[in-house]
Amino acid sequence: MGSFNVMLVDDEPINIQVLSGILEGDYKLIAATSGQKALDLAKRQKPELILLDMVMPEMDGLAVCRALKADPETKEIPEPPHPQQLPFRHHLWQRQSLDLSPDLGDHQRHIQEWVNLIKQLFSRHPHAQRAASPFHNWPGQSGKEYHYDIHPFETTFRPLPGNYIYAKQLPDGDWSPIYIGQTRDLHQRLEGHVNVADAIANGATHLHAHYDKVGQAARCTEEHDLVQRWHPVCNDVFE
Image (cartoon, rainbow, N blue to C red; front, top):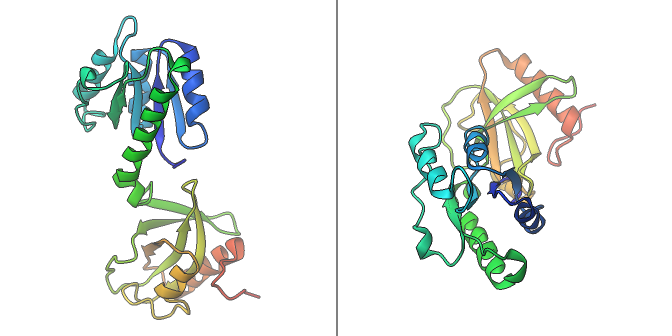
């Protein structure tokens, strides 16, 4: 779950410290000690979930929620449930917010309830079923980076030349290549020695690919550069 961004918003630093101690390692944490700081960070960081204190000076939690909805950069966040419908003092916002107990250290049952709720939300979150980003830049042995779009295996490609990588998404959201290849036809990928079933058997979870019109020599150079850098388990070793 480490690829999900969670924002902690509370004017009491001790509450942020307690929350960070509970959630660190499972999520990427962003902290704000005021409503205005939360709005600024939300636009830049785009968290999937906000743990938002409803009782803060200057700008309370409800004002933050209204501002998020009014801003074009954050208006996609759905309207949260009413605070009175939740057993906590903070508010749950997926790309939402959650209401916490006012005395966090004394209410382990409440802590466990909302931690379980966070995990349930992310288990159903659409990002949990796909790559965190639609593309990935793969560095080669030469230092050059190659831009690849990320696709599920069932993606249908046009019959055009290109390079592709059967890749495994790691728990931290990073990638490990299982097989790197190039082909005159991404639709069939006939020039690869490894098919999708072989790649999946070796741990692949996604297909990275890009179309290429520069010619076979350039495609082979890119393939060689990446294989030399990554040594994928399913590639023959280039001498």
